[in-house]
Image 1 (cartoon, rainbow, N blue to C red):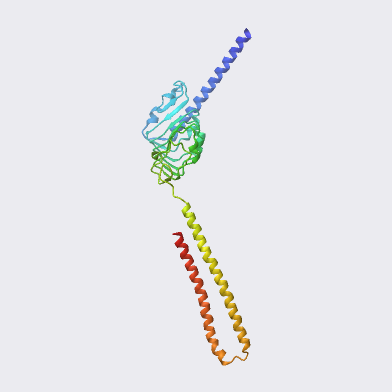
Image 2 (cartoon, one colour; image 1 turned 60 degrees about the vertical axis):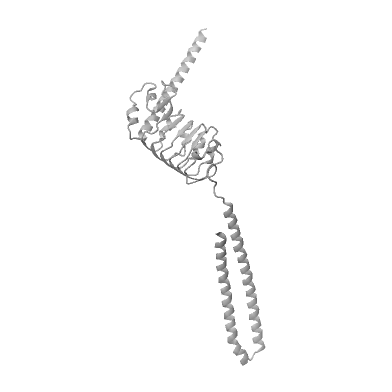
Length: 311
């Protein structure tokens, strides 16, 4: 009987210690999270400076901060941070990584700039909602967002994001709301997205973005076929020219041999042969000129044919 009571006391004590450690750890990290956010952002309207006071160290005091929601009112464990349209300036607050239990982040309609961190999934890995819309974020959409497997809402519209939309994001099973409208994105819209997401307003006003639900992407097959036709045409003309050149080479070689034989048949070099010598020289010069002119017109016609086919 006594042993049973002692055992119960030990169990209760251990549970109390574990709970205390857990609350203490949550308090320390979440307070550090909020302090870091406040320090990293310029509070142009004095919202955070007037509300986020860290002098009070009682349990649950951060839950009364403007824009901060806790799991429980008397527990310093941040559930959501909602700071829309507060005139905040700066880069994405990396201190969010210390809010280890956070599920919702809303920093929309502020003046945040720079790139969205590539390791975003290690900062807000348990987030179910991430709203960074109506800021000045630039650079590419990080593919690491695809590792935020709990995301239901992802809003990146009205920024200055460039590049293509990572196709991996479309495979997020829980994603129900997704918007990248009014950015500088380009390339095809991934077909991996849920059909519910594929509405025009979610992708509108991106100059280089194409594919369903926007206008179709330019086909590359036509360009490929044109290149093949152009290559075949130029190759055919080249082979024909080489054949003509070889034929002319053997022709002139044969003529040269015939002239040599005729000269051997007239060893004394009579006046008639001498009188024709100048004429033959003229003919040979004319033939050589004709040969080079043929090659000139070949290259000219080849370049014209290539440019015509490519057009």
